[in-house]
Length: 295
Image (cartoon, rainbow, N blue to C red):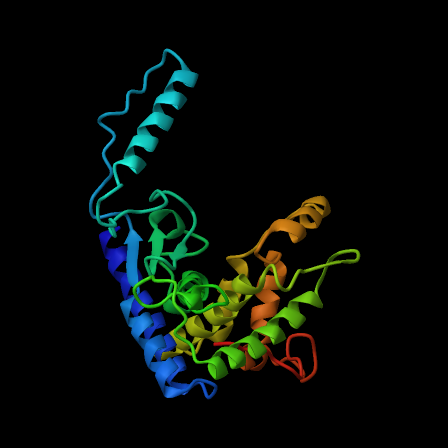
């Protein structure tokens, strides 16, 4: 795991470098906002695999007498742990999810990304696979979480995790204009019958998906690889999901994530590189005349 941890950390650094390059290039930012964006990106803390200091459970009693009693003692244990934080400095080493959890997150108040061991396994990370596969899968997740720091909500926090408006009005307006393109794009996707994706509910995740795929692709190319089809196939396969229509109908109302098939197609359709890799005809669904991009 330690060898893989180092490899994953190197991947994160490459993705972060791609984001910094992107920020330096975007034409809709002024120099002041650009400088603060680069400052925030450079300050992002990364947690990979497992914590350096493990949480202790010595005071928690678990036995075979009563499941209910075990649950109640666990609740008391956790409540006391949280109350003990009062009056103390923020513990920036704490993990909000357990290492076996198959997930990742960005925390805007701490300006950190967390990639537990649970997600560092197939289909997101394959130790025996080459860079194109891993950048397409876990690399996209890295870019996704990093972009959350600069999506419609994450952008409201500064480099230190403070809720502060560091955008000039002109640049904020340019951001919103680009975000509206993504809203319109996803609201055109029909999920079940006449139920469409809610472009505003899913905006933050859609921006993160778009940015994540773009950053992962740039990082994949920065490593010298030209196996673009492998990259995009790994990205798509990492989100393979099968759902009943009734579940799709429910989630489209409450889930801030778009259905997986639209997370894949929506992000890929906005990248010229995808259309080139698969020879998509201009004007086709995966090579539309109008493409959206925030980052």
